[in-house]
View 1 (cartoon, rainbow, N blue to C red):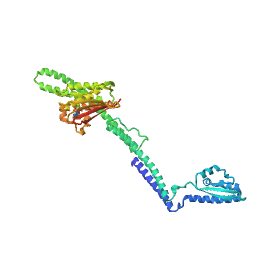
View 2: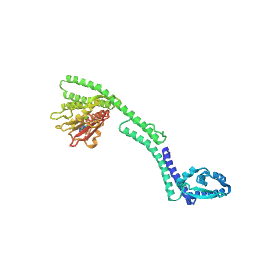
View 3: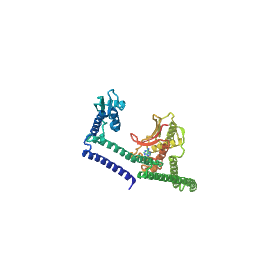
View 4: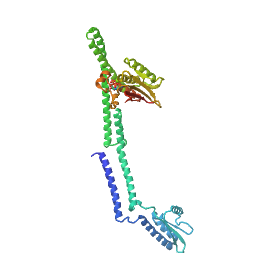
Length: 439
Ligand SMILES: Nc1ncnc2c1ncn2[C@@H]1O[C@H](COP(=O)(O)OP(=O)(O)O)[C@@H](O)[C@H]1O
Ligand SMILES: [Mg+2]
């Protein structure tokens, strides 16, 4: 049977058994009358006997005899009995202790005793601190016992529960990170080291994460190698096309045009894949320059508007003053260019696209590209940032690229520590926003 199982089973079982046994024993003793009398009474009867003996000893053997007698009494009782002579001196010299006790207001009794010459002494006896209240019969005792039991079982349960949940929290955190795409996340060594199922689970989890990471790296390497390998045949194809065009002298012009379009598409795909791999690789160096974002946006608006079909207002950009942000100009350019091209493709031809830049207080930047197309169903808004994802496969294949543009943009934004998101703009159309953190 498993170790964690036994840990939980034995802790629960033993504490229930111990608790029931303690309660049972106490109740049994009460029932048998062993505590039928308040222990305080037992103590005060003992004190009474000592007082009587003290009076006798003083009378028979005088002051020295009483001193000897008292010194022989066990401390627990002796510290509750004092004898003061006529001049106010305690015969064992414990005046200070007597004063403290008297001031504490503890219930006490006083008696006059005399020696054989009639010399008077005062005998003080004090009640004990509420004795053994935990063992006292009755409602009060039961409540007290319950409170002590609740406290002890709370402690036991606390350590049991936190021993289970603390390592589970670490596992949960690591698995969330993996789910978010951080394949380098690990649980690591648990402290204290655990040899039970949870320890094994943590080790298995880390093994699984390493395996996933290696697999992902292998996949990326394969994709990169294949893309690289495709480049040279593509280049040769373009050269061969030119030659064929010359030799063919117009007979196969249509077919050759078709071949050219397809090989251009293939080239874009290869370049996009390589771009995505480059941009999403955390280790590649990221440029760190002062970028004038406002200038960059205005240049982009101009470039994209220039290619807009006739009759389209192109990209409307209202910002003007310069705004410096430290980052990689190339990456930011490509990201926003992708958004603008998508927007131009989806917007109503006669309405164009709006590009805007806002600086939030604190210095974070929000760059928004808004079009007047049909927008997207809510459930697609997150998915469009995944590689090769297109909402309408057939239509988007004809009009657009390979579904890599937004993934590339998203990777570029993430390398700046930012976020990208899409929402349906009020009044129709899609709004894609890039948030760049304050620096
Ligand atoms: N402005 C937009 N309006 C509506 N749908 C859009 C818009 N931008 C992107 N999309 C959808 O998101 C998908 C992914 O975009 P993207 O990654 O740029 O790929 P591609 O443009 O190559 O198709 C597109 O295929 C399209 O379906
Ligand atoms: Mg695109």
